[in-house]
Length: 133
Image 1: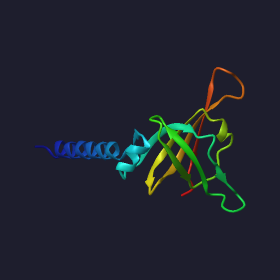
Image 2: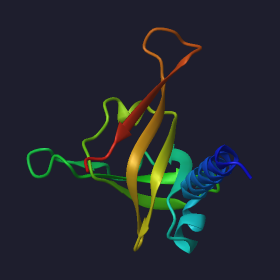
Image 3: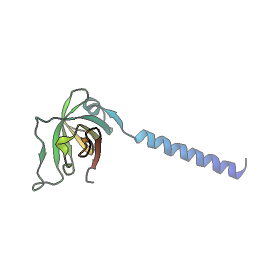
Image 4: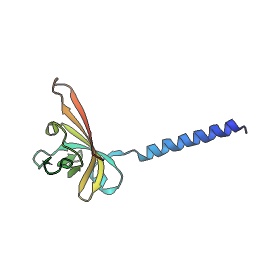
């Protein structure tokens, strides 16, 4: 075989390996029950539990925000986010969290909110907030 053929095969093998590792590391959608069963990072979709306490006190800790959410299967769980409370959080129609379970609470690293738009009644606004590293 020619040297260029061998180099081409090696480059293709490396590219396939990178694609496979990226695919294996990507998080999937699940519920709070799924998150309790795995240590992998998941996306959990749900709604804010409005009758439960939302805790954010920037004078005490500006990077601690916690609330309760109900996933699409109806399971309620406490969510802790290591960042500030997103603007108009209580108005969100739907929340997508990225994170994993730690003990009895879901530790979110990212919050994606679907909020009613300020300008039109038939469109929604999407906001994404990431945790402080």
